[in-house]
Image (cartoon, rainbow, N blue to C red; front, side, top):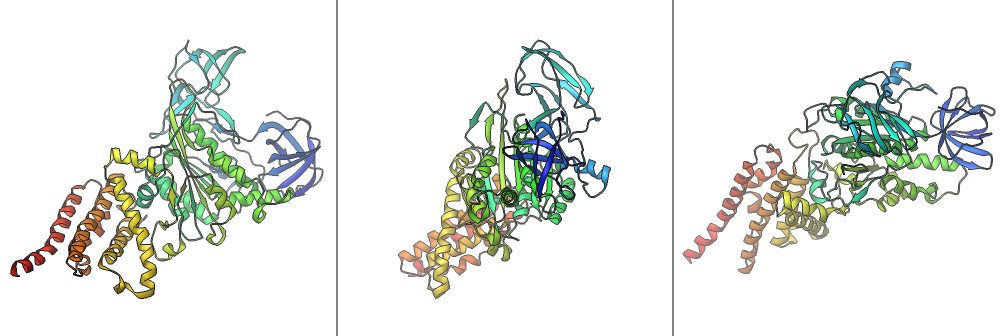
Length: 601
């Protein structure tokens, strides 16, 4: 790390430090502040004055304190050893920090993001004489049983491999030599990448394949495609963090990057304690073997929140470039926006709506636009994706909050959490009335081809029934249920079945916590079949100017079996055929008394 003549501090305002005499230092370069060499990043230059946001507490820093430039942007270290690690917002591994300094992070402590002494078995995938360029895979490391870590040629390097061999090596040792136009270039398994710079891609692909989460309300009604973006806003206590945990555990992504950005310490502690104990449902191995955690709690320095989301997305892009599907959860982007507001205020910038900086929308967009499904740079045309799910915590659950509105302008899926549903113990508390997904048509095509042709029809019917229920609910509150026609009372009953038997799901029940797409299809198909058969009875009675007693349908034994279908194990799908036969038999049985009456007459 190169060091020049030190500058000096002229004033301090919380996490913002203003320094002079930093000639040659550019925007977003890292500097070291004070005798303790605190991490800082240049965020504004006005004449000779450089405004620096410091990622650690600035107590004790005063005018005249030295500021040492590094002439390096804020970057992440990329290579074997990232998976399973818990980092802070500037990629310091917390386990190493604890080993050095105990339970509290001292100011100015340094720790390598990747272990420099641990050895890995490097296995070549290319041979001497091969022409290689940026993004080409030259070898791999079996980092975990779930993830093969592919060693790629860094960007900016192109030429002929003149040396490569299988060996036990550290991340800094040379594993290959490339003859470039400028001479020989030694390659190691360690790369660095500026967090605020997108990694290049060869091409972008429209997201079509669903990111299966196992959560029925999400996968069926408001699906997220691999490479898509989603927003999860909701008030305190509505279940944002539980939804994020469920997605991290069950989403069918190859890699998970979970960023706790400014969340309460007890919530982040729960994540850090439980994630290492979770079993990956896809491999049976520990979930941490395909997970990276970034912890930046609300009592940590405010400026580090702003960097943590970019640190996380830079890591996600690295694994995407290997050809993996990556899911990244940011909890919560509201705390990130609050950090931007505080820094902006200390910079004396003109405030925008509710005090947020005028560039709030562009900053949020710059984060979410790094999602997507892409053709990776490299000769073998790898395809990878990053799916971004950001939780938003608007004050009082107000969806008109600038952070929510700025996010909704750029994301394509909105999962709106509702505290009324949460208070009714309906989880996940996703409000089906105001949530939406702009990937629905593409995902419907994919799932209809792979799971069942009736997928789109069933989902559309369920959505319309729930919408009709909301309209009828106003009438019921005014004049009561008895004022409704038999057809409307049937709609209310079917809507209740959809809500309680299909959408409601327990995160703490082993069988119900995850539902495959096939099981989701079969569950909803039972309800729609029951609806069709029952509607035939109601319509037949209406044609005879008779009133059908909908309560008879409610009392059928098969209604209980439909309600318990969520508890059917994934390997016992034949039970759905049995329930379907019972629906036909029992509803057809209600027609028999009508036939007998006609015969007597």
